[in-house]
Image (tube, rainbow over all chains, first blue to last red; front, side, top):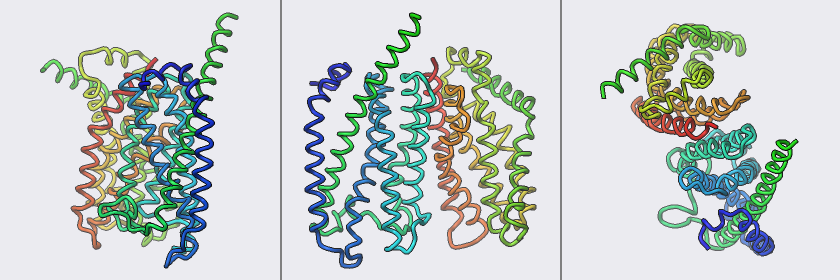
Length: 241
Length: 226
């Protein structure tokens, strides 16, 4: 079934109804395996047990950028291919991305207090992620301000694509600037610098968070489609009256 | 080809004339700049040494706010009297039109700020090297602020009751210009960082935003309309 077959909202909703229970089960299973792996993983030789915040902080950070990536693809779908559900996907991904960014900032801040001695520092990585968070909030505000969902979708799509410039800045900020945040340790040239005993649970948690995003995203898209149907019904009723 | 140039020149002249005449006139941006620069010593105290250290940052923030707050009406007044629709239906690509309007805005708002900045720098006890450095970086950086702000101005046309939404969306994107502008100013006075490093990045930001800004704004104006 090609992507264009899912352009029909009814068919999309039918697919979601079939797939969602499996996704929920997969997410719960992945979290169970990941958290068990995180608990059993060895302590870091420098940080001790505090390193285990990494298993929450890092996947949240990955997802915060991935959500903007999903929104950028959806934006292309709206502007270039005019896919009917693209702006639904974009609208539903924004609050999820904002939540992941917020959690990444908070867990990182809590990790920084024992490790760096401070809750916050204005280095390149933290500042660029904070700017990403502000852009998420601005985007959500834009969605709420324009009444017509289709028009809001096009305006938000352009803003999403312009804001996508921030993603490579965040990724490479620890390489381009001298930051307190540690440099790239997983996705870097020359392979990860994290030991495999810590890396495996990290990847499992990453998959778990990805499944969480997918589950919540599909559920939110279903709700948004329902919401738009209710809106159309109300408009039709008001016109008739 | 000459017809397009003539049309763009007429558009530039029209925008410049409107900016000079209405909304408080040409000097309102400079006046706001002066107000901001005056307010800061009231807030932080008259410690001259402290003002000299953060002076470039105050000037940059004042220029940023003055540019952004005057950009709101760039397209809105055209939209209200219908000329925006005529321009959209015309033969000139909307991206070039947006570029021209942005340049007109910079010449009437940004350039006066650049010229006023050395005078205001004296209020902040800046040394002569800092005065020249600030003016130069503002000269290169204020076009970037205008080009990035133009995207927000285009969005502001689509939002009737936008309020503060436009500055909130645009300000995160102007953060790199602010960072490198202040860094270049401080590097021009002394210190370990060579002046060329942040200055060339600032030039790059201006050139990049000169392309991305008009394209994004034109797309918004085309697609965001009813």
